[in-house]
Amino acid sequence: MHSSEIDPRIDAYDWGFDTRAEDPTERSKLEEMLMAVKAFASGILRDERPYTLSLLGQSGTGKTHLTKAMGRLFRKISTKRGGTVPWRKLCDDIRAGERGMLRDLETDHYVALDDVGSEYQAKSNYTISALDGILDARTGRRWTLITCNLSLREIAEQWDVRIASRLKRDGSVVVGVDGVSDFSFRKF
Image (spheres, rainbow, N blue to C red):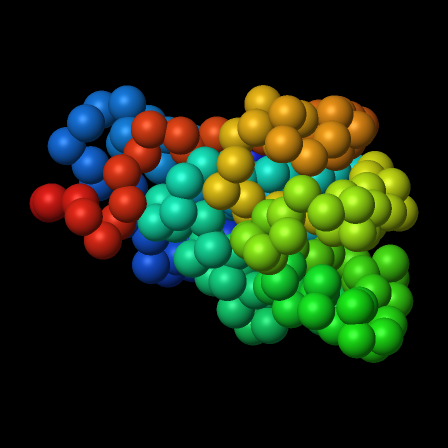
């Protein structure tokens, strides 16, 4: 993790995220994901060197929940420009010729790209090129959080090795939550 100290406002915030799980490995992965998002948010508030945080793994593990919670938190405590962008909507807007959201991605202080790869043509040259361009413009320059239902290895195999490489570059952090059960099916 980057920030060794979590900002008190970030730590006190009610993320609405339950890390309880019967399996200790699952609990550890959920706690790691929550701490990674808290460290990321703290770094943004402290104007530390930007990096990319990737939350990777199957659906239902809380990746989108934490991303949206961070957006709500920043609307309350910060004037920094940014927000969550659903990947599928971004791809649809770009295909339709709407470039406003893409321009915002280049200038926003922080951006969360949610559910990257959820579009129906995840393997198309278009989506690979779009993500590659966004990562190229933002990596090491702007705060970028990515959620994806694939593992880093699957991204390299199914999309492009360059994408997987960019997710690991310039001090970026990858948190894998593979093996964590879907919240909808978890028993407490």
